Length: 361
Image (cartoon, rainbow, N blue to C red; front, side, top):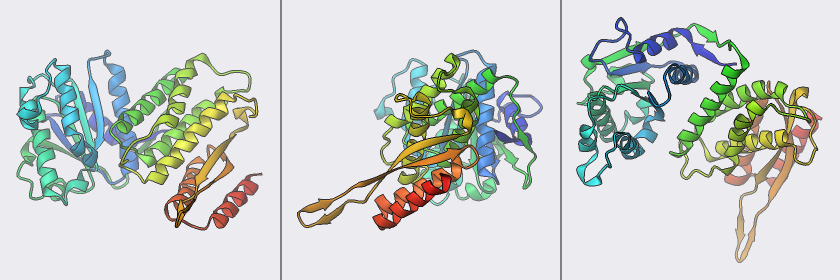
C-alpha cells in the first residue's frame, strides 16, 4: 500500500499547479528539506502521477533525477528539451547558451532533483548544476530540489543560490501519513504502470533506486497476486506484466543509486515473478495462495590459479510472500555480494541458501 506525506503532497501539488496562494509569480524553484527520504520519494511519485493524470497527453513533461545522476546527464536532459522545441543542440554553444535558446514558455515542464546534499562537498559540481537550473527556471520551468538539511547549509558557498527567488518547504519531524485508497482497480493498475515507466526512464540514465524498487515490487505483488490463476490473467494486466518482465533485459553500465548486487537481486526477483506468472511449463500453482517460488542464481567469484580459472554458480529457489518480499530481496543481495563480490565461502553460502529454502518448506 502506498503511504505518502499528506501535507507535503498538498503543498507541492498546489505549487506545481501554480496556485496563486501557494506560489509567488516569479518563484520557479522550490527547495524541500526532507527528513524521511523514503516517504518523500513516495509522495513525489504520487504527485507526479496525479499531475500526469490531470493533464492532456503532451501538455506536461516531468523528469525525476538524483543530483549526481542529473549532473552527469545535464547535457542529455537539456538537449531533449531543446528538441521538444524543434531545435537541435550544438555542443559548440555550451550548456548554458543552449538553455538560453529556449523560449520563456517552459511552464509545462517539471524537473525534480533529489539528494541535492550529495553535491555539497563538490563546489564545482554544485555551481554548474545550480547555474543550469536557475537559467532553466528563468524560462518558467518548475524545478523541485530535494535535500537533507537546511537550504543555507546545502548550498553553502554557492554564489548562484538566490534564496529570494526560491520557495522553501520543511518536512515535519513527524509528518501526517496517508494511505492511498484507490477508487477503482483501473486507477491502481495505471499508477503502477506509471511507476514502472519512471523506473525504466531512470535506468536509461544508469540510475536505480533500490529501496524504491522494493516498495514498487511489493505493491505490484499486492495488486497482481489476487488476479492471476493457472488458467488466466486479465487482459488489462498484460501490459503491467510485460513491464515486470522487461527488467530481465536491463544491463545498465556503472549503475548509480544502488550497489551492483542490489540491482542483481532486484532483477532476479522481477524475472522470477514474470516467469511465475507466465508459467510456461505449468509448474506453478495459483498466485492466490499468496506465495511465489522464485528461481535464483548466485554466481561465485572467479578464482585464478595460474592458467586455471575456476568459476561457478549456485541455483536455488526462494519462496516469497507480500509480507517478506523486501527482506528476502535483501537476503539475496547479501548472498550475491558474499559470493560474487567479496568471495565468501561457497560451501557456507550453499548451506545458508539451503537452510533458507528448508525454512519455507
